[in-house]
Length: 308
Image 1 (cartoon, rainbow, N blue to C red):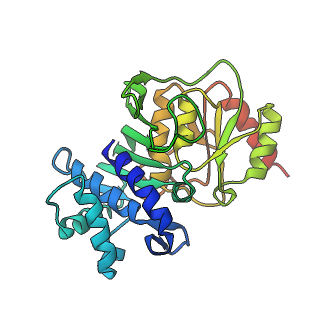
Image 2: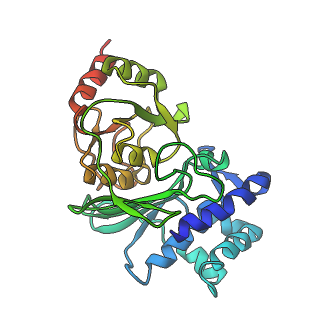
Image 3: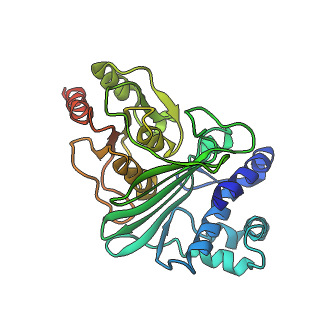
């Protein structure tokens, strides 16, 4: 919840000053002050409570190379952790270098969907705990996703948080009212599907062919793991992610448990469960999350679309 508040506060100021607050990674994807501040804040909050290794998307190299950036990130973190030092913020970011595999560790994507964040649309703060390849607990903070439906929350970032624990189900917390409710997928029928806003992240053309075979309604398009949450609470039957890029663990693992604990199913495009003990990726390029009811039909449709 603190991370949702931090990113919501930062969203307006960063967008106004995008030229100095947005950097590019080696793959040309954007990263903002909010990414660094959010990852540092969550790491510092977790350390005294559950000091496991952290596999995070960001590290502190950019802050070491830019004192102004380091000071700005530190200032935002200090609002929530008074007295924290610049050195502690940098150290927290560096703790995100864990390589994954077996054992217990945290997985964190501090701003999943940075382009959505910059458009004032959907993004998510995504965290989970993994133990020997099994996701034990997860949370998706979605500050711009209204608790009552898809779309964009009103100004002020009053969205929701999805959370799940292995064997204990999934729930949604309304950030505006504080109300919490159990969520379940809609297993009755196929309705619509969700896919990435950015066509570079997945094949909209292939998704359209599959949806036509399944007689699904036109897609909801949004950034980030909010898509897993929309399936988990029954507003979409299917999330398709057919890509030519190997999927990163931080983009997939937190949302996977939310869907599964809500009664849905997540697999690769051949129906195999995803593996979370491979390091910083999940070893596949194509995956889907569904209400379970249409999972088999979707796998058949994917196979048909792949046939020459």
